[in-house]
Length: 491
Image 1 (cartoon, helix red, strand yellow):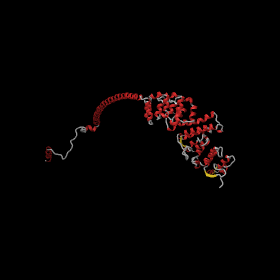
Image 2 (tube, helix red, strand yellow; image 1 turned 45 degrees about the vertical axis):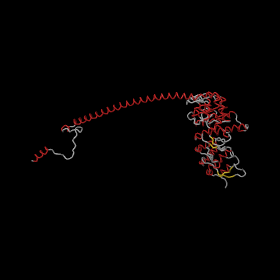
Image 3 (cartoon, one colour; image 1 turned 180 degrees about the vertical axis):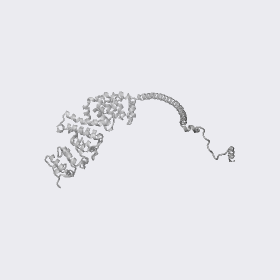
Image 4 (tube, helix red, strand yellow; image 1 turned 120 degrees about the vertical axis):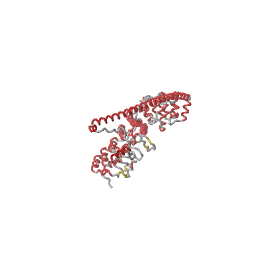
């Protein structure tokens, strides 16, 4: 079956006449529904046929630069208008990728991505067969994200995060090493791959960046770091400092990325944030097993450049040793290096929780028995100080509790007296109200008899408030006197 004219225009070896393609789309829009295409990635001598949506085919060829250098946006827009469901459709030949996955891969083009987002914003939430969102494909592999226009990449990234902010912390599956990574992990890996490729092939046309252009590409790393840091620190968004944020235990890395941060922000090592934290404080505020090696490397660099930081407390009065022990770090995790630089910090009480370092390590949810033993062995006199301190505090607390108890008893007595007075007063007021009601009722009855002329001519009836009539109980008994009267009348 011969291919339709639309596909023949796209399969032409000469430069594509996009005007003719657009005219064909207007005249015969149903040809877009055809899925029978030539697989250009196969052997050219024996090409194979496969089913594929036209939108995925064109964007995939544009990304891989197999056939086309650039596809006009108006052509893609016409194709989407002819087949709107193609934007969110998954292509089984591309591991379940949507058109947005393909557009984000390998030097993404801003115009194409923005067009797809305008047509179908929900495509941001669709994962491919690897359970990855389109935003993960934005950084490609082997440093490809830093080869194109980094400014456009930042704009695309901002637009994707505007629609789906939680994707900044979503875990992605790395197809190569079968591990899960966050977006920050992907960016650091790609930046390291880009710098290693630049060092290995310094004269390649893709890596001929001057120092200024390299700093522009570095902005992409800082942008992803800022968005990741703001996701976990929404209460202090104005407290972002690049070096402090990077050295935070959740984001610290080793190798080339660590070297770059120390190279770019070496003057900020002695800078404090709004909470009084130095970079060494930020490094020990959060501890993860996955970043233990990177944390140890960063700590050695910080103590080498600025050893005085181990003796400087933050605004809460906490030393770096206190923060590290509270987060479960052991002597082998870098606490031994801090003690070697600052032995006096072992006998400094944490001003926030009023504990010595050994007690802070014991109170941690990730406490280590060997670390606690070594800290106590270094300075056993601290236990005696703690006993005296807490003993004095105990007597002070007991005295204070007794005073508070006496105040409560006096308050209760005063309240009971006031309660009895209030009750007596209410009883008196109730009696007065009752007497007033009786007096008003008598006055009303007098007024009624005074103003009623019939009532004046008739004898006054006994009020119901007066003497009550004797109730009738059984058969009436006639008196002797009554019988005499009746007998007299009968005669």
